[in-house]
Image (cartoon, rainbow, N blue to C red):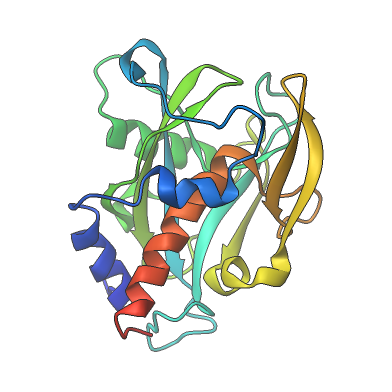
Length: 224
């Protein structure tokens, strides 16, 4: 498997202290009460998701690590689902008994988008994120797939599978803010205009914001 420089950087960087909420907060909905992660995280429902990064060899045949060619796999959740229906998310879900966080993230990804697990290299974990709407803790795992993965959406859970490049995430023109009502409160919500029908916001945007922060750290030390 060919590893672009950023992926090698991530594999080492994820073993060190992470940006955490300082990275996530750039895409956090702002309200009068500032969001703070809870301290009793073990009391909440646990879910795991996989942020699957891949190099698009169609545009980067030499395995370049630039923002133009590195992409993140995303899904649009089925409108039939009870929670967060129709929203952009990473593949993932609740942990089964006895599963580790990484096992959950990998299993759910294979079930939802049909990517073969033998092609996925798990790099490490991001900072857990508390989601007040569902009173759950999300544990994001980062994986790498060499080349654009072949996908088969699980129609019961996924309406669409698409990807977004780091170039689009880094482009300030793709970020907007609007007042929305969330949990009965009006909040100013930052989001990326990268989905065909729905914006990329909320928990998924906050987790991606931490990845973007790590990418900016990677480029700030002279990498391209």
